[in-house]
Image (cartoon, rainbow, N blue to C red):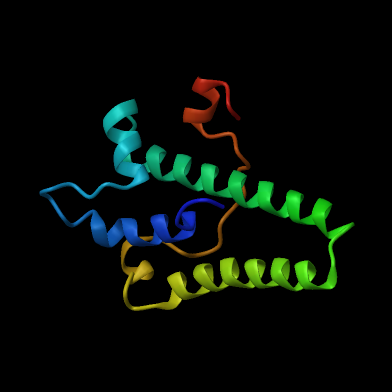
Length: 123
């Protein structure tokens, strides 16, 4: 994971979307500007990319865990806990006020098959 957690990008989007000028530099805005996506599709694509990155990490972690030393195993557990912490904190902190900007009720999992991904052949 070589960038800020994708969940934070999504959680901060609502608050940042209230800034009109200059438009905040974040992945949903880049997707809307450079790929002509509407806001909802850009958010779904950002979530899809985040999920792919997390799944890639989990898969790599499982492979490494088969040969990892006890120290590396603890490190991997710490990384996973840190990622979970980012997610939980982002949902609950008043900083992002997620419930104000997004419907955080029960969700259905649609996998990686967003319209943008289908159009680009990356689903």
